[in-house]
Image (cartoon, rainbow, N blue to C red; front, side):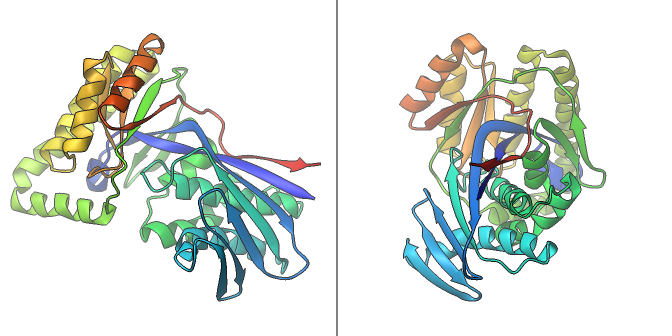
Amino acid sequence: MKVTAVAPGKTILVGEHFVVYGEAAVVMAINRHVQVTIEERDDPFLHISSDLGVSGLFMEDVYKADKGHEAGRRVLEPIKISAQTALDALAEKRGLNIHVHSTLPMAVGLGSSGALAVATVTAVGKLFGRAFSEEEILALSTGAEKFVHVNPSGIDQAISTYGGVIVYKKHEGMTRLNTASAIPLVIGNTGIQRNTGNLVDGVRAKGNRFPEIMKLMNNVAGQVSQRFIDALQTDDLNRLGELMDLNHGLLVTIGVSNNALDTLVAAAKTSGALGAKLTGAGGGGCMIALSSLEKREQVSEAIRRAGGTPMIVEKEDKGVRCWMNE
């Protein structure tokens, strides 16, 4: 018997970086997913295959690569951690064959690791007759996220578990936000890898040099996030776009954008996007453009011509879901 679970990725609409200092970040699940299919093995080991270019067998602490050599272990380790954590919670000592398929680009700030952890935990539970609660899924997926991000906020697991839109504040936690808006976006991937920790440290260092200025910018960023939340409630796409532009300007000012991101943002705006900004840590990774449904294709083409890899997405209201395969 096989079980399949799918979980959505995410994009940060506004508030990245400033969320570290207590301001609100607004995060949206997108209709690109990670899919995990599992079945039992006859031995106690975990075999993980994928369309990510890596696969291998985990025999307790020993890893044997099928594809991707030993370096592939770091890619697959979070999946192994998620599966083993779920098995331990169920007091099961079974082996598993795990296959991963993704329509979500990996390691570009779109929540792929969180989606993988959530889908894996959910699938393992289902295979052994347990429908983990949302709270259990969040708790059981934390270990894999710590392996990837060291000190994760929990946003990625939460948005993959719940779907929809979440507002996160550091000292207040997460609030699910009900909005009827589809929030049509075009994501542009620069293809540039970046180190989130280094970027966060750079912003902190700038704040130490200019504390009063950074305090003012944090306040402005918080106001942008709050007005963005208000505009979501009224489905005012034009206002949402303006606020995204303001947020990008703040991110440029604190030094986390770069030429590649700014080029894609400018191309999207010139082609008719209502607003555009980097999303996530910056320094590479992805940008997002808010567009009317009528202009999404031309915005997408403009991003492509400017050197990015475009992806048309919308809000995904459904979080992780799971089913048995015949």
